[in-house]
Length: 185
Image (cartoon, rainbow, N blue to C red; front, side, top):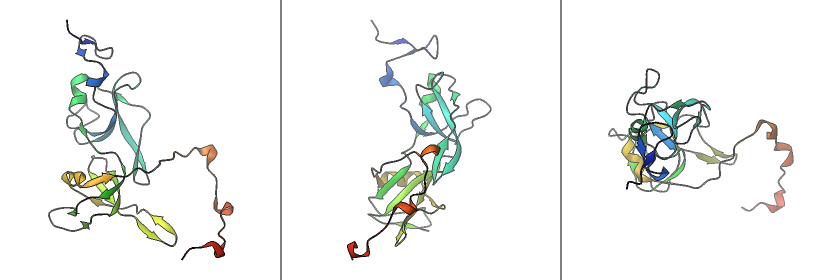
């Protein structure tokens, strides 16, 4: 007897339990989905979306991070999800091995470099190189497009991500003071 069961979202098809589903995450489309979504589009895929498995398109970017629409597009069948190309998560990475952005060697990234990984609307990786000054860490709004194969030369860093809520936004500049006698040189 088979352990397969009917898929609630695609009647008449069979899928194993959730372990066989394409995991939720960041993807690049490789095939068109209807007339509105072509190949080569950055999407977030939910295998348990509402009302079913679907892709969510980029609505805008904030600080080099894609903000996806709350309204998704249901995938046409279970096979479409398998055509999505997985992408590493956006965020901060440490360069593990030296590499160049492209074959022209325009920009070099060295071991230990801190970089922010983001993507353009076509799902192509872009690296943003932060700078550090007396004013703190600055992450530029313009980055360097890199080849896909360079992604495996970086290790993801764990940095807490905090979502802002409009009701909790406040200017903290008046609440922060520094005692010059307690500075370490």
